[in-house]
Image (cartoon, rainbow, N blue to C red; front, side, top):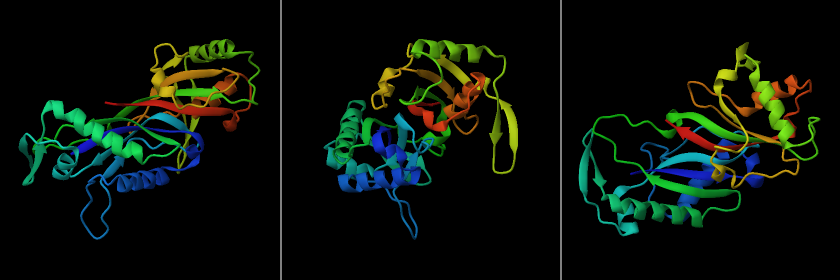
Length: 270
């Protein structure tokens, strides 16, 4: 059975990379003694996948991973009796459960993982996914990502020449009025000029955004910040950094990447 787990990454651990995050949660699951599934072969590893990896230095309340656990062992550990089994194709079967048992299983995984999670990470939510249908491919979280909410804050000790958060948002609105926002997009092979405005779906103050997504965000005295929803995923992806670089250019300022703190509030899975 597969669980989709939302977690936060904050504080000093924002400086560790994605591979270290993976290793951390592998250790969390081992310490929790949850019956995780392992791949077959010479070098078995936990069956675990992550949605869009978070960049180094970015905090988040909206990270997702999916973990597979052994059906029978987890039912026994959580004290739940399966309602039956179903064919999932390729000669395999999976145990099924009653609707009212799903929260029991979710709480069991949530509590066990939370008990082994330390400062800098927090388990926020656990959802049990339905069993796969026979011979039907099930998309993982990574391939389902299509948008993300961000909060970008001006750090203390830096200035854009704006007096407060209200003027910051007003100037950002002026910036977004432009018919195009063109930036240089670099790849390993070449550089292309692209218009990123269509990839900014929404922007402004906190109104209309889910503010539970900033529970672990850093706070700054200036109060100068902007919320935005942008394209994310394999088809189209826009990080906040190019947006802020273009905004600084609009203000006639040189972009300093250290001046802004990016916090990912939520990933949206289509």
